[in-house]
Image: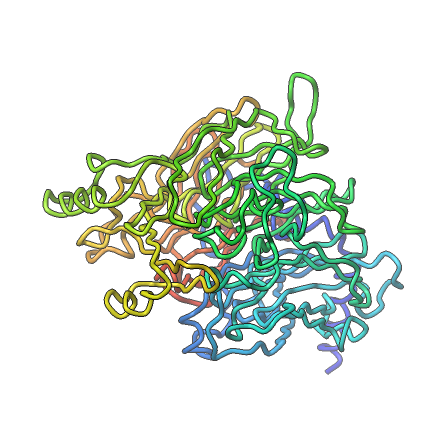
Amino acid sequence: MKIQFFSAFLFCLLGFLWPASAGEWGHYGGDAGGSRHSELSQITPANVDDLEQAWSFSTGDLTARPDDIKESAFEGTPILVAGSLVFCTPFNEIIALDPGTGAQKWRFDPKVTTGYRPANQFICRGVSYWKDPMAEQGAVCAETVFMGTVDSRLVSVDVHSGAACMGFGNEGEVSIDPGMALLWPGEFQITSPPVIVGDTVIVGSAIGDNARADAPKGSVRAFDARTGEPRWDFDPVARGAVEQPGSWGDGDAARTGHANVWAPMSVDEARGLVFLPTSSPSPDFFGGERPGDNRYANSVVALNGATGEVAWHFQTVHHDVWDYDLPAQPSLVTLQRPEGPVDVVVQVAKTGFVFVLNRETGEPIFGVEERPVPQDGPIGEFLSPTQPFPVAPPPLVPHTITPDDAWGITPWDRGACRDAIASYRSEGLFTPPSPEGTLEFPFSGGGANWGGMAFNPDTQIMYVNTSRALHVIKLIPSEEIQAERDRTGNFIAQQAGTPWGMSRELLLSPFDLPCNPPPFGVLHAVDLSDGTIKWESTLGTVQDIAPLPIPWALGTPNFGGPLVTSGGLVFIGAAMDDYLRAFNAETGEEVWAGRLPGGGQATPMTYEWQGRQYVVIAAGGHSTSTTTLGDEVVAFALPQ
């Protein structure tokens, strides 16, 4: 008993003495700005082939939640703070591990509601750490971990013990009110980690798409980090406001919801700004009830973290009817320009565009042009005549496809894909949804997604992974929705309050492979000093998804992001096979692949502990992507 007491005391003491920055990965994105870069260089292209599994930890979800895990995605990225590796499970259990052994130190279970259908599966991408500068050293909850839950709570626990911070909200938690009755319990949830500006903790939300026009607001909410008292909230739909000067419609936002921030946010601590990647207004695929550009939706929005006031915003899609919301954390980096260092925001998008914006003003660094886009939408629609196209970098994914581009592994399936492509409307990027069916390329899960980018400040190179596949979007008259659902069995959403429902499905060959040509997943290196693409490498094989386990390097659609190290490596899982990979950051060559016990649809992180560099990834799979489900966190390191 004395030995156990002394050990616990020592762990606690070391935690209080351990500075928050020493862990190398103190935030979800590595730092508050989401650069996903580490100065560590112990692992290099010369020795990466010697990497071995150092430890693994099972959360127990496979045995404890055998039914619910089928609707989950283990997308969490751990952080190293106060001497512990801390992460959340898809079911919002917060777990702290010993960084050297993977042994559990403590566990907190908020007992989220399960047994229902969440809008975006059971997901928790990460937690956030805060050290109260006003608290007495050693006091309970002087250092805290914040997490949003799938059942819409914001919880606060002590980083050293996992005990709830009883002075925060109602015994350690604040319940988030969505502001209106939900259609089903899982329509509203929180999936990405909160962020902290000073002593204000800020949280977004994930809301079910396409159910209705009169939908919950996508408000971003801020609370006192000590007490949980509300500070401010920001509604990304400009209700009752006239559209910005020069726009083509005032817009009636009274029946418009969402434009929520489901993806991770980022913070400029020196400027006191929080950067939001907002999503599309509701519903996604018909905007006749929301004419105008829909200001603040589909935008990078810079807010004053203390007040919630808008500092600036930049819209990446006007009047979105393609579900081209901003899915990734805005990355805050510094570019070395001819005029000197310039602080910027880099926003990657589902369209495959990369927007590089001045962090002070929101002005594009490389320029953005408003270009005409296809028109002739369905009855009642109000399309924007132009859309913003970055001058540089060039788009990372193709935007057009013709029947001659159809792909297949035999003449038979290639012919089937050619006929299918020819049967739908397809005029390139921003072709509007239609009753006859429109090809959306890239698909709404394509381009870049929530994994975001990684940036090496020494080389000015950013790394980002993208996916390439086709969606068929079809608008269905509201009175015909049930008959269409009965006839096809496809995914069909009501879009209640509008005259059109919608269906969405991937365009696949008879062999269940994409009809567009490979690669289906790509890792890119982009030089942000001049906006040029440095290299592109195929990401993933069909080994774990094809009928035969052949490691055919076609690339795969992918979820999860990269990390880059000063050792000259880019680490990434994400693909639909069960591997964590390392690429040579200079050449793009794949130099190592470590087999995982489940799908690696998460972003890895790295840290040094007792002189040894570790690379860690959650390997629990992604039920929607049909990758191997699991519940393990796996650490790799060089042999001791």
